[in-house]
Image 1 (cartoon, one colour):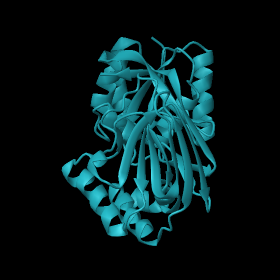
Image 2 (cartoon, helix red, strand yellow):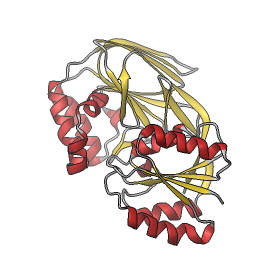
Image 3 (cartoon, one colour):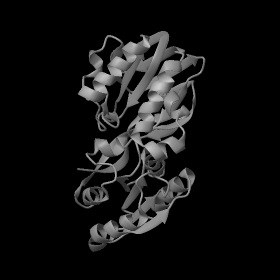
Image 4 (tube, one colour):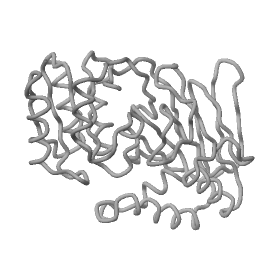
Amino acid sequence: MRRLIIYNPRARQTHAVRLTQIADAKLGPVGGYELRVADSPGEATLLARSAADRGYDQVIAVGGDGTINVVAQGLVGSDVALGIVPLGTGNAAGSNLGLRVGDIASAMDLIVHGKTTRVDLGRINGRHFLTMAGVGLDAQVAYELHDAWKRHLGKIAFIRQFFRTTFSYKLPHCRVEITSGEQDLALDEPLWAVLVCNLPIFTWRVRVAPEAAADDAQLDFIIFHRCSTRQLISVAGDNFLFGVDISASPFVTVTQGTRMTVNAAPPAYWQADGDVGGQTPVTAEVVPAALNLIVP
């Protein structure tokens, strides 16, 4: 078993000594591992792609959702299995696998004892994503959130920025087209956001797409229509605090499909797995069975 660990030294809750100690204990008896430090997102992708080209069996991404995303970029279409050790802030990928952020031992146990399965990815403007993407408010929050706040406050920084951004956000007028193969959807109206989910949990404690599955060759689209700021916060709060199904809100449309286009005036930001990629126009689509993933 040839394993490569790609490690982001800047991820929150990262402790290199503890990582290597646990990796030695868990992976040492079952083939061992190599460890490489990625000093940039581009380097992480190149390391993963090189491992795929050289016939490695597993590549393990150690860091936040952004690190997991850039490692996955290098494995798309290969037979190499992606393992996840979540050490970031949002922990969307880890949460969908039942992993707690910072629990390196449990993540290593999953890598050793889990199964490898082929999963879909999403792709937005050419960038693949494992868990989710979004256009509008969520991407604006990510755009305005400074890394220093994330490092010092963790999840609280996201909550703080959500409120700051929401109260100042001006809804763009969006033209959205979603292709489902059955009943296509077209909208032309102001929107708070359009979320695109490949897995049920959008981010920490936020399950906006309970029907999403990574092997159904579809994406789940969650559209937040125009409503008051108080109404939006109420919908988000009920989901975050009490697990209320977001589709129960009259201000939210949930649908499935294979492809989406969004144009917005003024242009709106978009993000993939929590990292801002640019502004509209946007095309998002499913890429079936694009990645091998180690799952429970």
